[in-house]
Length: 387
Image 1 (cartoon, helix red, strand yellow):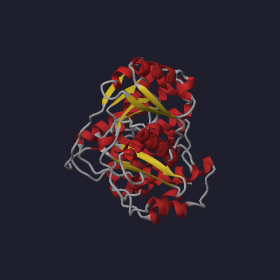
Image 2 (cartoon, one colour; image 1 turned 30 degrees about the vertical axis):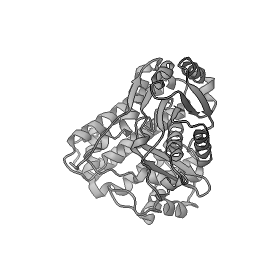
Image 3 (cartoon, rainbow, N blue to C red; image 1 turned 45 degrees about the vertical axis):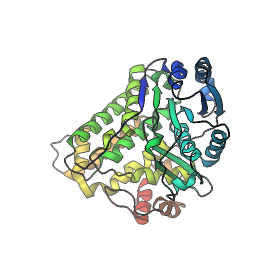
Image 4 (cartoon, rainbow, N blue to C red; image 1 turned 90 degrees about the vertical axis):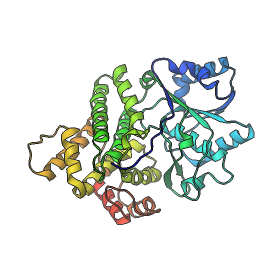
C-alpha cells in the first residue's frame, strides 16, 4: 500500500426536499452569491424557483450566471470571474451536474488569480486558493460535488483538460435523488459510465496490498451495475437513484484511490474525443475505456482476472487467464449496451481522420497513465481499437 493523505471536508446533505433548505445552509458562509447553472431544465423542473425562494428567505443577494453546456468552456468561466470580481462575490452556488460544478470551480480559482485562469489548465501555474463553492447536484455522474477536480474545454485550441485544487472542494453538496427523475435516459447512462470509469481509473493499479480499496471499488461497481439495471425498467425508483447518486460521489471523492497509484489514461484519451466532437463525456468513455482495457490488460493480467471474477461474476474455474480477463471486459461492454450506450466509434459516426492530432494532444504533457505508460502511438492504437 502506498503512502497517502485523505481529507474529505465536503458536508453531504442527502435526501428528499433538502434543496429547499439551501438558503439556511449558505447563510453561515455568505450574504451574497453567484448562482451558477446550466440550461432550461433547472427552470422547467421548478428547481430554480425553489432555490431562489430559499435564498431570498435567507436574505441572500443573488447574482446569476446560467448557460453552462456539456463540456464547459472558457468564455463563460471568464464571464463568471468578471461578475465575481466586480461585485466582490466570495461564494458560488452551482446547481446542476458536473459541467456546472466544474465551471464554478474554474470561476472560483480564476477570480483569485491575477493571470489567465487557463494558466492552471495549461500547467503554467498551480491553483492553491478558491472562492467557496456549494452544489445542488442534478445529474449523478462526474462526482464533482465531492471532489477537488475541474475539467474545462478550450474551444480555440480543442484542448480539454483538468486541474486539481483542494480549495475547490465544495463546502457542502445537496443530493436529492428525486431531482434525477426528470433526467433524459441517456443522461442516466452517461452518468453511470462516468462513475464506473472513475472507479476503473483507481482500481486498475500495479500497487500491491490494497485489499481494502479493492473491496470498496468492487462493491461500489456492483452497486452501480445492479441499480442501473433497475432504472432501465423502473426509471423513477427512488432507492435505485439513491444508490446511484451516492455511488457517483464515492467514486470520485478520493476515498477509493487511497494507497494505490491511479491511472487516468482513459479520461485523458476521451477528453480529446469530446473536445473534437463535443460528445457527452460518458458517451465517449463507454467507447474508450473498454478499448483501453483490451490494449493494456496483459501488462497485469491478474488485476483483470480479479475484476472479471469479483465484479462481473465470471466463473473462476476457468484456467485460461486471458480468456477470463477478456470475458470480464466483454461483460462490461454488454452492460453498457444494456443501458443504451454504444461501445464503438463507428456506431456514433466517428472515423479515424483526427486520430493523429487527438493522440498528440492527449500526450501533450508527456506520457499518460500509470497501469501502462502510454505515448502518442499507444493512444492512436487505442483509438483504432475503439473503431
